[in-house]
Image (tube, rainbow over all chains, first blue to last red; front, side, top):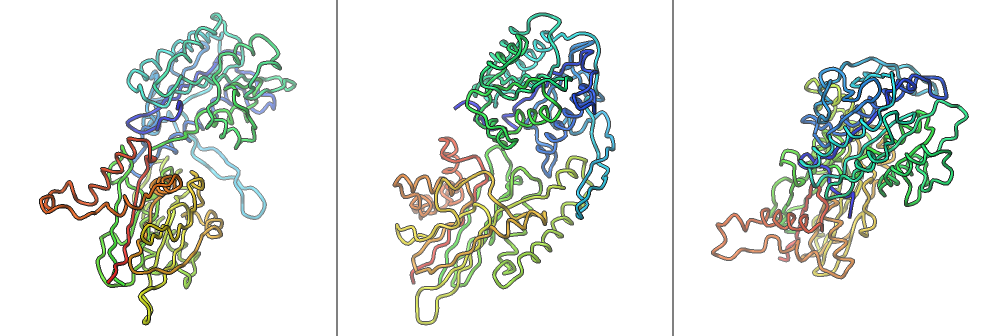
Length: 278
Length: 265
């Protein structure tokens, strides 16, 4: 059965985040709280932190995953900062030991008497927001493909890598259909690479669509393209989606349209929650 | 009552022995005429320092501090304080500190065998359970008791476990199960962690007799084989578990089996 391989230190899996860093990412999310670039940066940093904590054991961090973050905008390439800058794929333990910096942020916590109090928390940063120039989506997806070809050659029996592509606009370096197809044609012995297409919106009136199983309600060709090339959610991903309140049928796609930040965070969790860590 | 009791264990495939997160007590085999307590715990894989918590729980049960006469909550609170002291002895990196905030979890199955009453060759036993570690009582080829799980369908990845987090234990204590029964000479009790217990139930449900394999794990070797370590019971158990894993008949998880036989005298 596909998508059932155990994830272990000897048989790790892989996540690659492909992040749009074009000029339009400097627009704010519909609620006006953050720019899309800053919101996505926070969500990815938080996710990297959670992955590190998930893999942490008493003796250190177990390398259950290799992780890449590829940005595209003014340039295409590794979007890690600090000691990991320029590296296309790193292990979770490298991430754990090499944040670019650790910021102090304020988190609201329950004061035990029905109210909230501020608590300082440490927030490691590996990836900073950036937004400039065009949208060289094809080049970024081709980069992700080459990173995954190398990973799959070394780990042919792995749980299939998951690529999470986050964008707010159309490609400026050609039709990305072939690049997306080439990516999802890659496979391990446990199944094909899974591609998530997360589309962001800054329009407060835009209707969001989450994990549809058909494209009937999609508004335009660009949305169709992202839908058509997104993978189907695995049964475990559908069950994780259920915990977020989504009632999805078989055939639901790894695709969201006009997402706000809450939906982005939910989709990241659905795409990266491991089912079989050992 | 004359008991012969023997623990068998193996870590997950791909892990070292030091990474084994189940715990059992007593740690050594028993062969003697005595009342006894036995306990097996399964530390949660996705947390850290769960093996320490599992060891604390089994030792505490076998000291008699986790039974009806004691205040469970109070005992657990003391264990939680101790666990925190142990895990914070050394400075921890940022991720280990953050992981500790959610605490750790473990199952617990405790079994107390009481001696026979004066006028009878049979006696009583009591057991407690939190989570999916199981107790099976066999009389010959009859299954007398399965506790707290009764079928393979009941195994899930998220049982309610005993935690080092005080709030989480409110539900765990409510969900804790207790039972008791009678033993007769010749009965055998098996305590097993979830992967092996799930295999046991699946086999039983399709008409097989899985207890026969567990019973024969330390069959007396032939005279010629006695000095050969390949025939040691623990070695046989581990080889058998490797085979089950290779056939995908057993989840790759830490496995503990405690076999307790009451001898006919």
